[in-house]
Image (cartoon, rainbow, N blue to C red; front, side, top):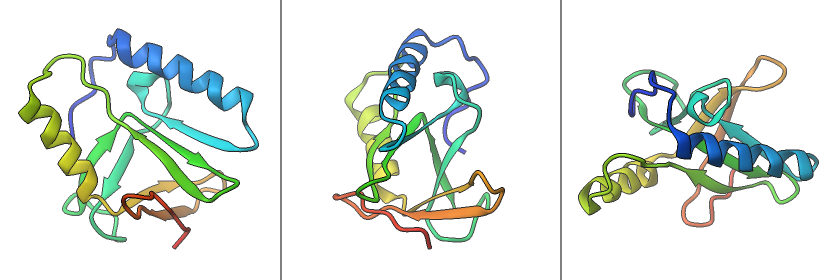
Length: 127
């Protein structure tokens, strides 16, 4: 779902990814930075409408996600637009992301984590 990221030649995505990687290295104990392939990461970052992971509940793939591990909060959901900067396009992306409730991914132990997104404070908990 979301936009296709097959063409990974996106200079802005790459630059933001480099900055986020530096943030991760400087504050590894405090922040977890997850980047998609266009930003130099190794995984997609799907957001879902429900706790059930499926094509029918996946609403978008964002470019990056930053979690403050000390405060147990998602502090940033990052979506980068390099090509279409029309207000209606940007607003559509924002609304789609705002409708999402969960980020579901495999953690370091290869078990699924369900991170609940609570807008606007972006609190999360492992469900």
